[in-house]
Image (cartoon, rainbow, N blue to C red):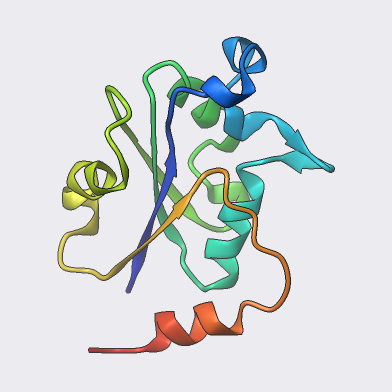
Length: 127
């Protein structure tokens, strides 16, 4: 079973001062918080075990909004990223979560639109 990491970190400087109040991933895009889009992408890919990596400031807000994922039919775990040090750090922080599984990573501000057949095909590919 493949797992996923959703990296919802960063300093939020480009959207300041809004990010002083709420984390960027919880800001609305159309009719839902931004984080719902990458989360839906992972779910459409068939991934049900997801690790959310975020800052100490933002993690409680994300956890409060998403909970354990059970109401969405998924399992969510959380890990704190002390300071934004890039995508590679998310894999280091998620090493225990991933274990021997394959993993997909998406950023918390990624919004994909349209057919995701390419993503499902990539996830179905076995080594």
